[in-house]
Image (cartoon, rainbow, N blue to C red; front, side):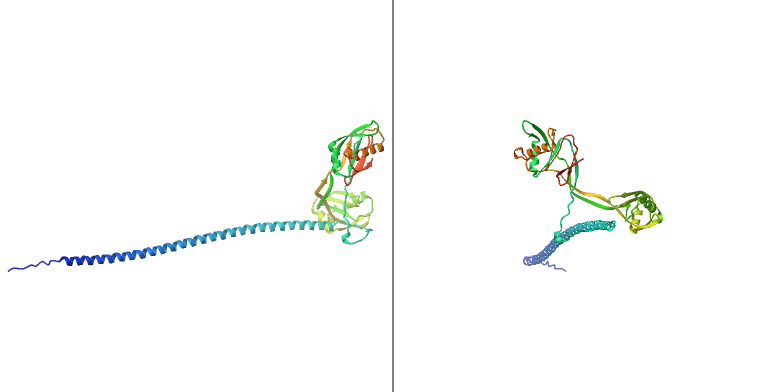
Length: 353
């Protein structure tokens, strides 16, 4: 018995068709993969762009916050400076108020004194200025003279030339030397006052012997029952008729001044005195000026009488040819005499001893 085996042969056309089909499937798969890659790329680019925008926005926000922080710091510094300025002004105002209060207390506690006004009254805008002129005693050496010119330039020229030959008539001539006057004239004086914690000023005193008055006051104010304490000194001021009492302890003077009026037994007669704080004075501002128009002449010999010599010197220094000029004041002190020159408004006046 025979079995017949038949081999199935695949034709080339069929195989080619299968290959084309597989190639088609492969291309579709590749295309799908490309689409997926493209979509992934687009998504990645979108995410990257979003991250970039977020980074920019974050940086802008950081910059804005930093600028805002800097502005707040600047505002805080300005507020601190303004606070310090206001605190300084408040401190200054408090200091001024304290000074004004102290001055008010000083003025309100000054000893009472009666005045009689005998002048004329007028409008407020017509008030005259009150001026105090200093008077300084300047001792002149023998054989010297003080000349005050009307113009400062004239005095400067006389000082620059220094040595001057003065013709006294005939063949008599003398040589004098010009020197500056080194004298400081006070032009402004400001005094600050404060209340002394140790002293009191006693006024409204009875008319009696000074030694007995001081003794009675010291005894009275040294007793603790009268509000006093240990007395350090007790002095009478003759110009004002008041007494200054100094205590060892500080608080005693203030308590006595608060009570103000005190009854004291003077020779079995009760008399009320007034106790006020003692005011200390301290110069806080002093302005001085020189004597620019006054010249000192030295080396003047005693060859003629005083009036004649003064006239000859004055004539010489008035002439323009001698670098002189108009003279406001002239004071000559010959040999053998003592003279004090009184300087008020930078002009010397004689005061013979």
